[in-house]
Amino acid sequence: MSPVRNAARRPAVALVLTSAASLQVGAAVGATLFPLVGPFGVAAMRQVTSAIVLGAVVRPPLQRIGLRRLAPAILLGVVLVGMNLALYGAVERIGLGLAVTVEFLGPLAVALLGARRRRDALVALLALAGVAALAGAFGGPAPDAGGLALGLAAAALWAAYILLSERAGALPGLTGTAVAAFVGTVLTLPVLVVLLAALPGERLLQVLAVGAAVGLLSSALPYSLDLVVLRRLPRAVFGMLQSAHPVAAALFGLLVLGQHLDLLQVAGVAAVCGANVLALSGRPAGPPPA
Image (tube, one colour):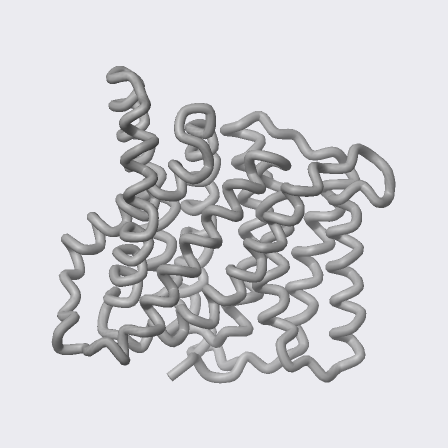
């Protein structure tokens, strides 16, 4: 890669790292609300906050765009709801660092999509070894099986998110993110209203304030940044940089939630992150998506 082209991509790389840090801080803060509204309530508040902020800022010209062009963004909204519900369910059961690491298999699968090299098979084995370490196969306590299953569901949905974000990014500005947030709100708001109505008054204000912050940090900001970045970076480079997510999740899980990983679990996180980097490091980056 030429120095000029490399320098042009540095701002996009910084945006990816900012997105990862913001999302995982928001996820950690959101987990503190589980005793009050559960994983569904936190995921729903993320969607509502994101829809309000983006709707006010973007004001997408939906009539001029048309339903057919909006289809990827609508599907993106459905995927985001499923991904957030699965992830928060996993966080509740196995902790933030482990849940995000298992979820990270989604970007890794995108990175290996269509792989033909022998090296890619070894990369896949490294990733599986990392997940096995997290699951307690090499000793140590085994995490909740349901939490692992939810993490794998979130992984599949994260892969779909990356692919759909590329297509939604073809819409003008942040229209794709705004439409996805609105769809997510329509799907989750009725249940959220029931959950909030059951809270006492003093708790309701606390939940609304924290939920708004979670929505900004975990949805509105990072998803908007990702949509912008996917216009500037090739999918392979974007996928490699997603290695920041498990590391950020482990860090903020410790700092915000007091969740500690043992040495084998740290090794598992490192193996999954390393597999992603190895899968992409020997592959030409190519041009940014059109």
